Length: 322
Image 1 (cartoon, rainbow, N blue to C red):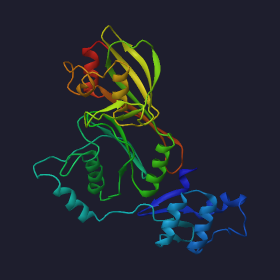
Image 2: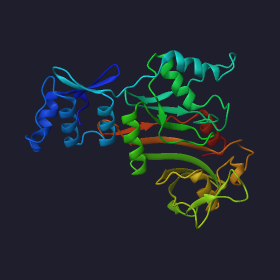
Image 3: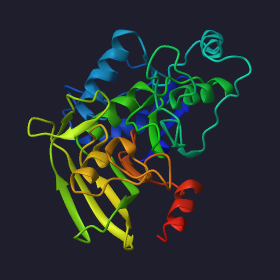
Image 4: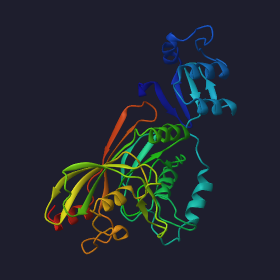
């Protein structure tokens, strides 16, 4: 799908009438008549549903609240609903003591539809309880507020607090619907790097082991026959007598999946005390997101985002001669 025929106009997404008519060459012209200036929103809705350009649920919601319009050259869909800036800003500021600095997080990719942040180690993606502050969700909200473009950004996936790397956010309802579907259909590809104890027997492999909760430890997960299906691909990048640097890719996204699977095969992550990792070299798990690939929520074209290696990971690799 050509991005050029879509333009953002404030809260509205403008789509060329001519383009919609050309795309409709294969549909019944009597049932779905061509669009023209001033076409009734019901006619626009019918043609959009016939073309299957957007989710049916989303188009029907816009129609039901009067958020489909037709101008001389374009149809307008209210895709970029803005929050009340003053209300949102007042709420967000109330969450932090006045002396606490606002979090700033590097951006790896951004357009009108989505943004990928480079989450630092130690920052939660979302609040873990009442009054939890300094999260990536908060940083994302503040970004829009400071730009006076407060789109309702929602994270599509998560990382553990101490895992650094790319986190994808949708900027509007349509993007969230599309990206959530891509996650369910396993079309969002996440690659990681980790430093683990020991030398894996194989240079590459797949850990296919279900993961469930640990009845004896509230924050732990464990491999369990009754757990959820989980598959992790790994490949040795470098290794020595005591440590190995791995490249990993997830097929599923279970809580602590890499950490549990590496512990299960006898190679816990360096620094991961929760799963038996040694902590003399680093005080948290040596795991970072390296790259993220996802279908663009408007065009469907693949977007590949590379994440630079954080200094703490480079320093640990050097220290362990990896």
